Amino acid sequence: MTDPTHPVLAAVAQGLGARHRTLPPWLFYDRRGSELFERITELPEYYLTRAEREILETRSDDIVRLAASGAEDPLHVVELGAGSATKTQLLLRAVVRLQGACTFLPVDVSEAALDGAVERLDREEPGLRVRPVAGTHHEALPVIGELGPRRLVLFLGSSIGNHEDEEAVALLSAVAEQLAPGGCLLLGTDRRKDPAVLLPAYDDAQGVTAAFNLNLLHRLRRELGADFDVSSWRHEARWNDAHSRVEMHLVSTVAQVVTVPGAGSFHFEAGESIHTESSIKYARPRVERLLRDAGFEPVEVLTDANERFDLHLARRVQG
Ligand SMILES: C[S@@+](CC[C@H](N)C(=O)[O-])C[C@H]1O[C@@H](n2cnc3c(N)ncnc32)[C@H](O)[C@@H]1O
Image (tube, rainbow, N blue to C red):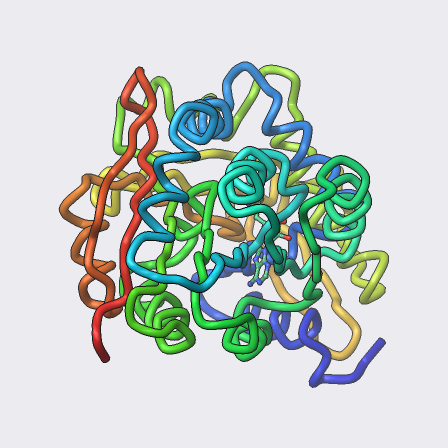
């Protein structure tokens, strides 16, 4: 494949051509990447999913009542980067229980993840009408506007933490623009905590996160014909205190040249890395600032019993 407008090739040409080598995290999620992410969510070190699930298990009814309050129209739910939507099912059940039926629009770049979610939800949740949207968040945004007047947009898993603040505000503002005043956003954010807890969540003992990170190179070999020698790269998770984020890198263990047909040849020194993901760890005021800057009014923050993870419910203010 050498079409320079193809999103994967364009992202690789741009990211590897830069002085600080990067690849965007959405590239992780081919079929194998989505499978590996599901395994990550079950790892003992990966507390994020368990903490967020605990909040949804205990507070879904409250979230739905707050999001639905002050409107006659039924609430419909959109999820950006839904993945398998396993945790989301708890919230969707609460919507169906409280209002009888609900339309759910899961959005994801990974068709494999969406297929699994739709098949399971159709089978297990009779009151739910599922309308999957395969594509990026930005591609899906216009569809949100067609869902009826009262919408709840979910952005879970602390995926917002992949974006620096300016980019996060741009994304959340684009969501806000699709909502009528009163429409709600539920945003999952991971809290800043001891790096001794954070780092193992991104570098587990079984090596599943390492396989997830390295799968990116397998994907580029398969889809673009890139000649990465995957055995000469290793996974590394780093805590960047100044930016309050865990970074995932792929580190070249030798000096080498990698050729990606259509994008060029790239020289790497031994020890040089490709930065593949940032996961920002937040203090609450930072999240509240992001929400307000994007046109939302914070309504409530829900936290797990061990205070590791926050779910922020926010309402779209008059534009
Ligand atoms: C970290 S996983 C989170 C999955 C799920 N929301 C959870 O909390 O467990 C991120 C998901 O978002 C999807 N994704 C990543 N970047 C995306 C983008 N730019 N547009 C749409 N989906 C994206 C991935 O395919 C993946 O399923």
